[in-house]
Length: 361
Image (cartoon, rainbow, N blue to C red):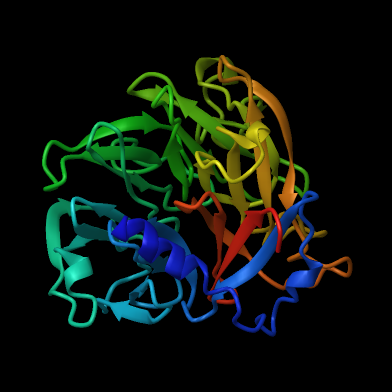
């Protein structure tokens, strides 16, 4: 009951004024849904994770710190000196935080928000390249810590055991292994609430034109699967420089998400506040294109799946951060289901967290 009360206290903080950079009245949602501002005091807000006592932890790409949004709405900076600490995940009272080449842990963090403990570094080390080196991290149903390592380039053929893969390890950093290969850059993954299968987004390569390749939504069915990078993109485009094997040699994506949309964080909807047809749908934060002639993305997508895990339908759930003249008013980076069933959306451009709920405003 205490945890539920604290979470509701945090989520009730929606009376704050709308941030100047984003007029939330311009955000378009399906009928019956409403968006409000939770906070705009989290610089470079990226990945999000809930603590056990109602604390919302948020990573950052623009700061050397990570942040805690306390149940009373206060925002506290945790740790410092980290390099692009995008990823945060909470596990058995401890907060795990990613950096470019390392993972650190803040022990018993919710008991020490006002005086955070010194960060402990896990023994597992990662490459130091900044290109695609920032990391979304999460613990899986197997109690393992999952950590991606992106390709250190736009297109190249790096050591497959070191780069362009998704790895997992024990909570203490031991027993490290590669789960999946051929992943250019995933900055979001999650597990199906029923099948427990791992799903992830992957950002496609640049410099093949405005309209290809699409970003991908992928599902891991077997440990050691290869999803094609650098040989194949979106399941059916052989790379003109590095394509040595046919696309048929690799696992094809479940869905093509659009060219250069920069699909990042994703979560299955497991709440009960939204209408029943949203249950177990995927929500995906699209950060938005950076070099496309006409911008695309800057929205939250909805993916509906068939019972066998194949694509049923994909659509736009929330949009309006990209205006009709191409102006960018926000960049969604992650989504997270709150215990009350609402959906949180982080926006690293505005340092903001939004709350989308269904029902009366």
